[in-house]
Length: 198
Image (cartoon, rainbow, N blue to C red):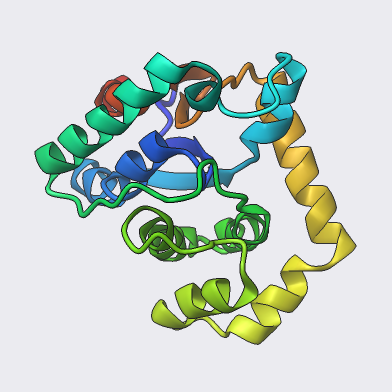
């Protein structure tokens, strides 16, 4: 039996713990000789299916308060820049559509890190066309064509289908990693996912 040498990274741009993984995963994968498949999806519809109208970090005050303390601590641990976003959870539909298109070409990682930086370091609106264009330009991807493609109904349908697939595979939060059919949930399981490949 062939051991899969790819790690699926399912993430939402609004997810703080996805930020921790997004900023580290490519370097870890390069060291392990593993391909990262970037899988953007939207947590909102999944939360709604569970009866929640927003993030559990908002619904559960104590859990949310702890998360912000923990995020600052984890960013110090990993040497990552961090600024608590003034809006949470932030809408990220446009960058998710762009990331989905870029994942099909294997170029999603650098763009996704730029968007995560806009949200969790610069405290910027990431669903803004100018911000997405800035993130694309930073990684030398032509912005106009990519943003136009992201606005096509076909791309919108692909993101909905991607979110439906996440639900069908049992994803209930972000980040989630898959090694073949085996699922790992949470930034603290990233290394376990790599170990499963090895």
